[in-house]
Image (tube, rainbow, N blue to C red; front, top):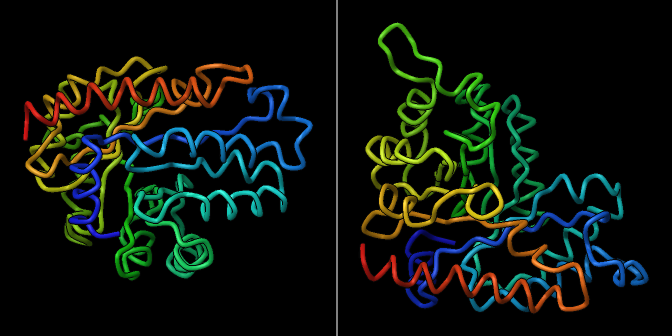
Length: 271
């Protein structure tokens, strides 16, 4: 999917919602456990009920990998189920030497046809650029994340007082463009989102942390939105686990709708 196609979907749906798909067998509604493939059944109902409001879906690959070969089969079926006009993110956080990264890219971009993949930048250019060789595919590079441990490295300053995440932003923009690189920027970082926007004014940000992690959507929009929105705000647990009963999919739809309504107002305010 191209950047213009993604922005078109944002405009059509008045939404920049990304629904994170984290299907945990211990958390999904108990009645689904009698299904032949409980994880697929769970994901199918979530997608069917939230597709009106989502412009992106982000399956967390770990939840599928943990199930072994069957999990990979389920992941492929889930990816095929997502409507083709909705942006897909393989949340795999890959990042290895060049020949290995090329095969990771082939797995997610060709074998399973995801639009994008999350990538860790720690090993540098040769671990990232193989993902950028695929037309209309995206790298979503970890920049400033919302987890507690992000403080261990991402805010460390060099001799000039520049934090590591800023170096990641500056260096990586030499490898790709706003047409094929996005950045992960955590919603719980508040005003730091504005600092990232200054360093990467045209790029899309994938923003986790809204909902269960406490991030504020209005604040994200205030500091992070640009002329083409530039945001994919992810909510996972707050949507997919809104209920653990037989109404779980309808509850997910209600929560997705709530976020879409708020997003519509923010798009009207800032665009």
